[in-house]
Image 1 (cartoon, rainbow, N blue to C red):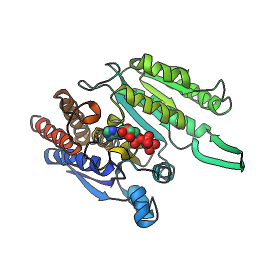
Image 2 (spheres, protein in one colour):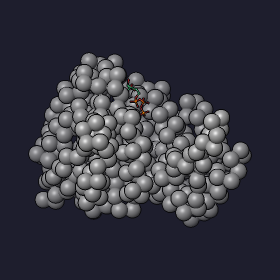
Image 3 (cartoon, rainbow, N blue to C red):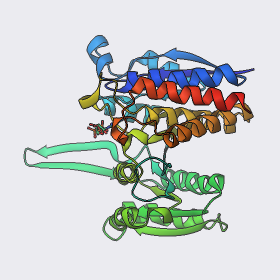
Image 4 (cartoon, rainbow, N blue to C red):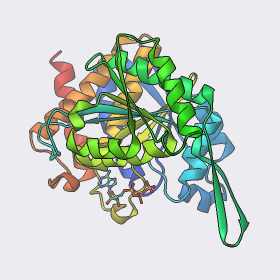
Length: 347
Ligand code: ATP
């Protein structure tokens, strides 16, 4: 049996409730498939800052680095000190955010199935900001050839992995941001030449925001810079049922960390009403990544089973409040876990 060391960061707000529900699903997977996940529970976020005076302790960073993969709940106000820092420290340059319309879930249109591949380490979120005077503030947007090239390659490889529409859309604003977006677009265009089997198009970010509403089913892989990707992916989440369903992966050449797209959602924290699906789907992405990286079919099967169980839960009308249902966070986790058991035993 293959075993993996998984760093778990429950985080803040709804994070711990989502983590408990997700662990029920992962328990069901381990009971039924030949797979062992050894968890290392770690602290990071607002509560950690209150308790220990630091939002991202050194031991958390070390444990994440030495784990096979990390699964993280959302964090609150300290997000920049936790996730933005982890992305930079571990060089997790690709933020991969899939969006899919599931049957039984209210969505703008059926047939939506695309992924946003967002550059995760540079752009405006590099945080190079200063205030030369009381009345002026400046933010520097850093785009490099290396950063653009590796994210563009990731996007084309992702299109091949998905193997569906075989299409990459590079999103930028090179008509205005001529230097930064100009370099990003130039590099994407040049990488596209290495992938003749994948069709390539470019779109200005404002047009892409509009097209996401009008024709979301036409997208396959969108590749873009850091802040554009952040904004477009929240918009994309709304197309397919909201943030409660949106998982994300932060992937580098050596490490990977999986988490929901959303934040701590303090307004509903502690009430057992949050949708755990975003973290359950993040755990599915983690198993998929482990499976393809370690050539482990059991992990791949586990990932497929989790998604199948979640889809079946939606089909049966099991949903949380955000999707119009009345299941609690923990109950949703239990329902998906029992469907995992059902599917795994009927293999
Ligand atoms: P951040 O700026 O850190 O991304 P935010 O203030 O934009 O956070 P989020 O926490 O991302 O807010 O989410 C916005 C709102 O969406 C929440 O206040 C909550 O009502 C809803 N929401 C987010 N995640 C979930 C979830 N998993 N289940 C149900 N509702 C959610």
